[in-house]
Length: 308
Ligand code: GLU
Image (cartoon, rainbow, N blue to C red; front, side):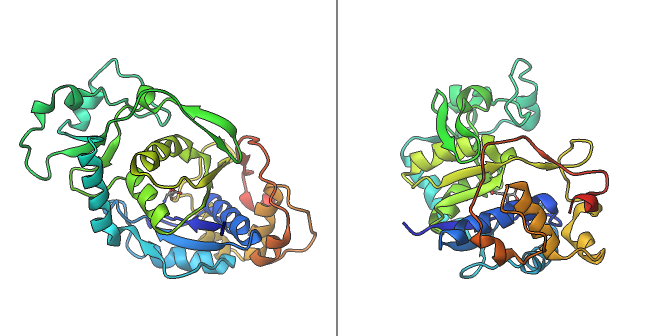
């Protein structure tokens, strides 16, 4: 089987060291197996898209020494395909309309919280379909009828793993009220469209992976292999944010840090054979991929440069 890896940045701000590490590892994994790499731009959340960030991201990726096969795929150009999939799920009885507001869901006081801290959808509109019957376009979302039980699979980093999506998240959103496909649905459809066979990304997306597996099964799409890498966190143990200038690739570049240094840091973090010389991204393709088991987050020191 030909391996197809992918890079899937969101144009919502600048790339930081955590992104650099995920993208380098995704690229090394695919390229070291003679595979191709596709680029997808997750630009569906129009309110979060930052003007100019797509250009900056492409510049950062090229600066790191990464390339990709074919043209980048913008998710916003795939609305028709996303709609067709929603229609197919509807015909299969796998979704329903929901008019609940965020406030209504949050005030379902006894609702347990899901793995991302989100409130489990209590199933209000599933139990009472009359609520959404005849709702005008723009006033209802579409939710997946999440089957009960634990979703189990083997992650390349975390090993055997399971998530009870129905019990912790409930029926999750497939299309937002504005009609756009949700991240969960769009990522499954677009990974399949681009022929992606393996996904490497940070493990804050592990809970999403369970939802995506359910959707791929419901849509009869192949399931790519998955590797969820421990997050890179700051000295306080907090996840890196795009606003943390000190760790963005732009700031590092302006501060004179070479892409080779970042490649070496990312390579060391997964146990690639150490070299005392900084090498370009393509050099590390020769090294064996040692993703290993999850050793917890990669903590950066107070001054990230000390670690690079
Ligand atoms: N675009 C998402 C992000 O930057 C990643 C999506 C994915 O890897 O599935 O967080």
